[in-house]
Image (cartoon, rainbow, N blue to C red):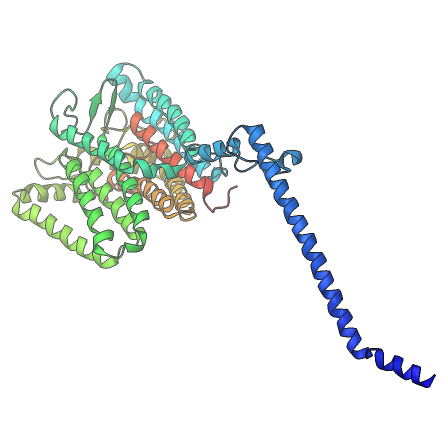
Length: 469
């Protein structure tokens, strides 16, 4: 009995050796089982994928496949023809609503426009009746162009301003062609002499000044090039040379008309945009030295020194000018401003507009504003322009890209510079030269063009990072 028990103990394996063997066996079995499950699931997945591809190919009849289960879920594949059409449509999309426009800017702009129309009628009905026998001639035409300009402005506000990149050089080429045509066709029926200069181009029933188009073309091409080379604007090759060449070309053609005021505006706009674009200040110092040298050469060595001195004396003392210098318009303007005093003579009560002040509906309309509405009315006009410029700068600085920022700054600078120069000329702060007051002075095509440019600013405001009321 004891011998049999000892034999059974010898034949029985040790407990500690038996447990690892069982564990390894169970592990291998579980691994084989899991591998079999994975193989079966992979085969099933591949089979389902093949079946889904076959079913999608048979149903669509094209090479485009729809993932399995998409149809059952009611979804649309990103690779379906409908999605592809949406991508193409988005790529070539020109008009888009995106965010809302900046209503503060729009309200200020419409206030200036309505104010300008009222003052234009008040300033122009006497000269309009004298010239044509119709007191409503100027205001009727201006009102038609104002309504047209508002429609154009709102339409352009839906236009994606990024597409202007494509048309920058095209618009520049058309502008240069128009300016060359004015210079070449001087004295013809297409470019007649008006007020001693050849500035207007008559094409059928349409007449306009190509220099107005040149302002926008300059702003657009500058914004286009600066946005591309923004990181290189501190260099002479990319930050100075191309803009000096373009300015010299456009301003040179404009000065040949001659149109000194438009040339000054072009130079001022260029300086503002180059400064905002990142050009180093030392280049502005070099430009100032060269400009001073050029003016000194024209004055002392071009044979026009005596004439220039006479004009300066007439500007400094318009009520006692030298012989041969006409300061009649400046004198009448100053008399109109002085007559207005604090509150003015009242709306439509101006006396200087009755054929005393030349161009009361155009370059010198601000003098009529001062006469009829006084210092208070003039201050309101200045504040409205200041608010418009301020809001335009805010919209521009909040633009999503450099192109929008530079384009908005350029268009806003054009309005601001032209307003400042007009008021300075009317008040005899600067010598008399023809500069119109934006949204006030008579001129249908220039008003439409100006409102169209404001439409571009509204387009920028749709994506601008600015609080919209």
